[in-house]
Length: 327
Image (cartoon, rainbow, N blue to C red):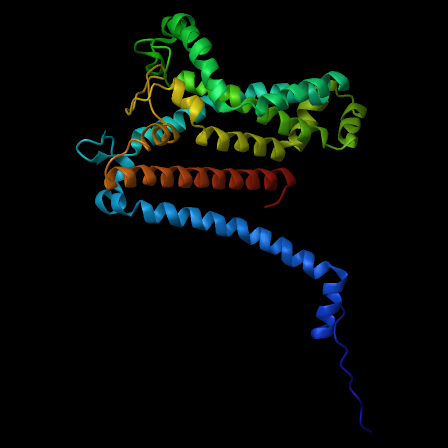
C-alpha cells in the first residue's frame, strides 16, 4: 500500500510575489528596508570619511611612513612633520579631564537620582542640560579670562609648593598648559556624565532598592552597593561618551593649552592637541606636503577615537559578563 507524503512549508517562510506584496502592504517590509538603508548610510558615511582622509594624506604617508606617528619634529619650513606631540597632548588633556570629571559627574548623578528631592533634581538637571549645550568657544573664553589667571597666580604655585617634587608639577607657572586644558575639558564633559548617568540610575528597577532596604541596608548602602553596580554598564557608557567629546574638542582647548608642539612631563607646561593644530594651521598651510601632514593628523585622530571607543566597548562587554556570571 502506497503512503502519500505531503510537504508542509514552515510557517513564516512563504515566498513568491504574492507573499512579498502582502508584506509590503502591511508595511513591515517597507519599514525594514527603510531602517536598513538608514543603518547602512552611517557605515557608508564613515567609510567615505576614512577614504577621503586616506587619499588626501597619501603624500605624507608615502614620505614619512610609520615614522610619522613617533616623530616629534613639527617644522613646516623644512618639511619635517611628526604626530607624537599632538597625540600626547590629546591623550594627556583627555585623561586629566576624565580624572576630574568622572568623580564629580558620578557623585552629582547619584545625588540627583537617589538622594535629592525629585523637584529639585528635575530643576537642576534642566540647568545641567543647558550647560551641555553651551558652545565650546564660550568655555574657552571663560578659561582665558577666569581660569588661566587663577591657575597662574594661585593653583599652579600651590601645586608646585606642595607637589613640586613630582615631575608632573615642575616648571614655570604660565597659567596655560595641559592641566588648564584638562580642567576646561572636565567642565565641558561633566554635564554629559551627569545627565546620562542620572537617567541610567533612574532606570534601575525599584525592586532592587526595596530588596536591599528590606535586608537592612541603609539608603546609602542600597545606592552604592545595589543601584550603582546595577547601572554600571550605562555609567561606563556615559564616561566613554564624555571621552569621545574630550578627544575631539577644539576651540576651548586651543585657547588655553599653549599651542607648543613639544612633549613635557609636567602638566604645567604648554602643549598641543591634534584638534588644536588642525584649527590653527590648516588655513595657513602652504605646500602639498604640509596640507597632507595635517590631513594625516586628522586620520590619526579618527583612528585614535575609533580604537579608544572599541576598547571601551570591550571593557563594557567584559564587565557585563563578569557581573552576570557569564564565563
